[in-house]
Image (cartoon, rainbow over all chains, first blue to last red; front, side, top):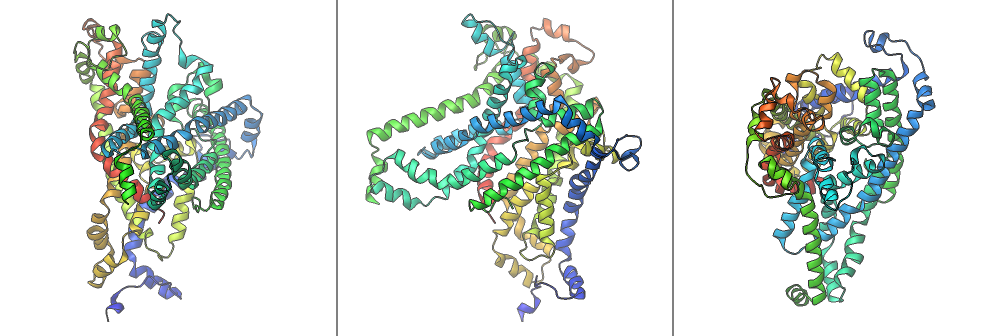
Amino acid sequence: MTSMKIRSLQNPNSKKSLLEYIFRNKWLYIMLIPGITLLIIFKYIPMYGITIAFKDFNVVKGIWQSPWIGLENFKYLFRSRDFFIVLKNSILISLYRLLWGFPVPIILALLLNEVRHIYYKKAIQTILYLPHFISWVVIVGIVYNFLSPSTGIVNHIIKMFSGQPIAFLQKEEYFRSIIVITDIWKESGWGTIIYLAAITGIDQDLYEAAIIDGASRWQRVRYITLPGIMSTVVVLLILRAGSILKNGFEQIFLMYSPLVYDVADVFETYSYRVGLQEGRFSYATAVGMFQSVVGLILIWITNVFAKKYGEGGLW
Amino acid sequence: MVIKQSVKRHPSNSSLLSDILIYTILALIASCMLYPFLNVIAVSISDYSSYLENPTRILPGKINLGAFKYVFSSSLILSSYRNTIIITILGTLISVIVTILTAYPLSKKSLKGKSIIMNLLIFSMMFSGGIIPDFYLIRSLGLLDTLWALILPSVISSYNIILMKNFFTSIPESLEEAARIDGASDIYILWKIIVPLSTPIIATISLFVCVGYWNSYFSAVLYIRDQRKWTLQLLLREIILSANTQLLNAGGNFAELSSNNNPLQTVKYASLIVVILPILCVYPFLQKYFVKGIMMGAVKG
């Protein structure tokens, strides 16, 4: 009796039953409307806007009326000196972040996992997660003040040891290191969460058995905890490799200056500068499109690898 | 069991040593994270002379709140504060509601058309039109120089929807079936059964979205020209990076300020504090939710 009243979500067979099906579940479909509308307007319509890259775009004429120019913008892009500087910077900064920044959350999570006093652990976690919630504007503001040649703390200390003050942010040789260090400072505490979640998934019996067998603490970390989170590590590593061209806009945009463009300019900042500051819309769209398309291919390739490692990948 | 307990109760010497080492390393790292905040707070409430004496201080010297008075006397900071609060509250409300509404139908196992929508969401995470098409869209919609330009584009986050969907999927279906037999509609079930059971994930996502709006800077750089529409982050950048403190008091009693012994440095630090204070106040209370929420949402559904 009651099962008759339960509306089934079974597959409909004919067109009529499809309409019936939609009507029966109308509220579910109505709920989807606002989300889908916003998704299409703000994510998918700009994807159509990518055709700007193939046109001689003119703001007055709009996308439809502007004449097609084919691959002109891309030819110009690949021939320009800027392109190789930007490509090199994007890859190098990403690689440095990966090389120095990737192991830090893993080590922090392993250390945190060894803490037995729950309040100490919670206090440390609270502090470690905090920088993640602070905007880049604030963090860069602090960095600017700390590194200021005249009044900054760092140069105060250098001067105490009778050194010469250094204008760190204006020196090409320091710029990338500052980017990488501030990024590690901001995000590595937050990055521990996913590893801590993976650690809680490890079977506790393994530890008990190891203790009975007389395994030392280091051996337990080395032979139980580390292998237990290895699949998470591999998947995150692969996914990071997939976003090697992405550096984000805010951090670099806020820190760089014309003095260090040669080591600091990445795709995000470059396409903003040529597009919205110099008004070369089509060219800037082409720059952005190169980054998006290569990024998509890289993510697709790395996802295939992630699936191979048995974590199901991203999708 | 007995052995395990004895191990825990009487750590050997080497274990004690490694404990000390681990606790010390973590304490050092935590101090590195905390130091800049303490220093900025200390300097912002101190007299400039104390800053000159020792810029590395974490304890305030001679207390002088002149920098804060100066910052809050500015009409620009008040209007920026108002704009940021508007986009944060409105944006968080809209975004969380839309996320719940979109995630719930997607948590149904066999809803027709579900896979199409999931694919649309996932693809939008990996590919985007880029800055220029985004800018052109906002311009065509007539949203340039409005606060809506800062709210609407980031209402939908595929990541948040998937996190929420995974949580909903983990709720036992039997709970809904009972209500459904009684003839409850989907809206009623979502509102009365699902939402109350999902507070950890809703709190987590609300916090993410809220902080995201509060901290958003790039969209304001792109879409806002009018100074009256500026957000806090935009204003802060001008104050700190362009050392443009005169902005605060367009009329310019900066001379008076300097004579008050409150120059640039303390004003800059005070404006930093003004921007992060709300986050510093809310953060410790919400912390326990988001760790729980992420851990549950991260479990693959």
